[in-house]
Image 1 (tube, rainbow, N blue to C red):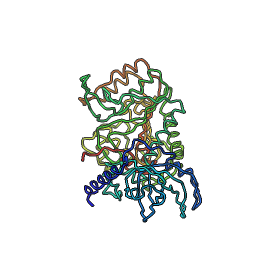
Image 2 (cartoon, rainbow, N blue to C red; image 1 turned 30 degrees about the vertical axis):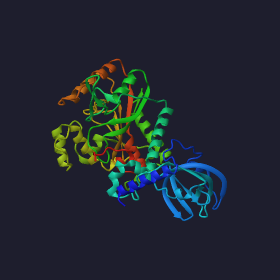
Image 3 (cartoon, rainbow, N blue to C red; image 1 turned 120 degrees about the vertical axis):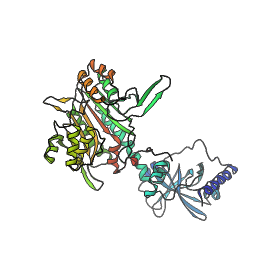
Image 4 (cartoon, helix red, strand yellow; image 1 turned 90 degrees about the vertical axis):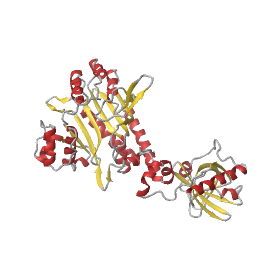
Length: 482
């Protein structure tokens, strides 16, 4: 039957229910137990057990088996299913009840029992429709042809595919664990502006908007970093922010313009301390959420058992290619060496992007990780402190797992003059980029030595769930307008 005809038919059925005196959209239904609670409470009942216990629960109708004077329905709520049993001799207005359809929400009251096959079941001795569905749920919601439609109509994806529902339960548990982990170590969660006058904390293209009352441009933040470090100036010792950042750049399986970022700052610390914190946090998270440290991802093994390997980026590049990149980071040199190494790069790529492509290509096997890549060039790490014994590199690491950058951390630069010079170098050749002089002024009041750590939460959850597309672990990923 065509979808329009189904819709009209269901509208007519709703009208019939209303004419019979049913409130098809009541404002409340008092349950005594959720389906999840019922399954936990009555787990292990023997086959054919009648408990004598009456309960009230509710859910969406998923399947229906009508057998004349008796029927079995499956209802679902909160990602959990339970069978309900209706019969002409026990269910009020049975003839109307069996005309209910998949997608309808109902509340039921009756005795809990198990069938001869051991299926936990609610005997429908009383019922109430809670929401009449005017469109049927999709019968099949699988296969590549439906992937974009699943993302576009996630509400259907969630109630049809239980495994998808569980991904987002896991996501919530992950974020809850991270907060508890950091709070237990004395960190304070804070909130900093998502709309900023000057976008800072990373090199990326921001989303631009306009504030009518103040008559000025504003930008959605590309990172919360500079505001969090202002809090260190203000006297906070341990802070973190877990929230959205935005970058007006490409969309692919690993990038979404709106993403979840965790940034952590700790006074009197450095990048070595952040390395230990990062490792401890991720190992503890996987033990808690996944229950194991060794698992397969995209057909390859990952073992998160600490301690994790460290690789010095310049040393490893020289060992594998024979090329000395340290001190030779001009664009022309990098393009020449990329060609020699048969690494394809876009002609208009910036220097740091070319270097990034070279090291990710040459160190591809090592980056399956987990591995900390250390000793990054100071040339492009403008917010990090240089090493005391080697000013060409900074105290910085990037954590790679499964070939993807998961975390980035510095010993934070707190020397105002050096920060000013770095900002000035960064904006050369860019008309729309500005220097955040207010941040430099904040540093002039004194910021303690500090370590900072940023972790991409979406990529972490991809690892936890075994998904290779960021869209699978974001509830409503950005899609082109239909």
